Structures are given as structure tokens and as C-alpha cells.
Image (cartoon, rainbow, N blue to C red; front, side, top):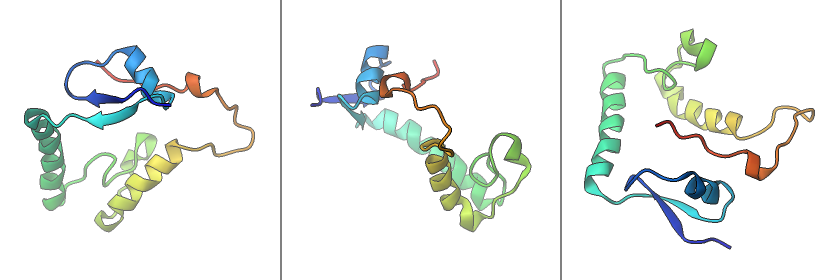
Length: 110
């Protein structure tokens, strides 16, 4: 059962709200506020501008972490994003310790 939606972008969220989303007890939604949406769009535009110039963008046209020195072809950039989400969303081995759902909570920088 969910307790409604937690809207990102309207105000700072509390730890309790993040836990509701992490536990599946509330839906995450993006704010419809035009100013907040414009901030998101400016990041999208920044990336697009640099890609159009043929520049490398960390984590988009490069690997991440120690692999940041490895270029990724522009035509594979979208696939890299999918692969990163898949990589971080699953265990790679049967020997991995599985934490309870409540222990795997989101981290939000201040």
C-alpha cells in the first residue's frame, strides 16, 4: 500500500520521505514547477551542447570511475546509460550479501 506521492524539487525532502519511496510505500514524482523543470532542462542542454561539439562528457561518452579514461562512441552513449543502471541495480555474483530492502536507501547530497 502506498501513502501517495513524494514530489522531488518543491522543497528539501526529509529522510522519512526518502525512506517511504525506498520502501515502495510512496511514489516518487518530479515537481511540475516550471522553474525547477528549467533547471533540469539546463543540465540536459549543457550535455547536448558539449556532445554536439564532439567533447567528452564524463559518464556519457566516457566510462566512470577508473574507466573515465575509456572513451565511449557517441552512438553507444544511450546504451551506456542503460548498462550503468542495470549494473548498479543488480548483484554480479551469487556470493553477494543481500541487504534487507530497508537497508538500501537513497543517498541525496546536500
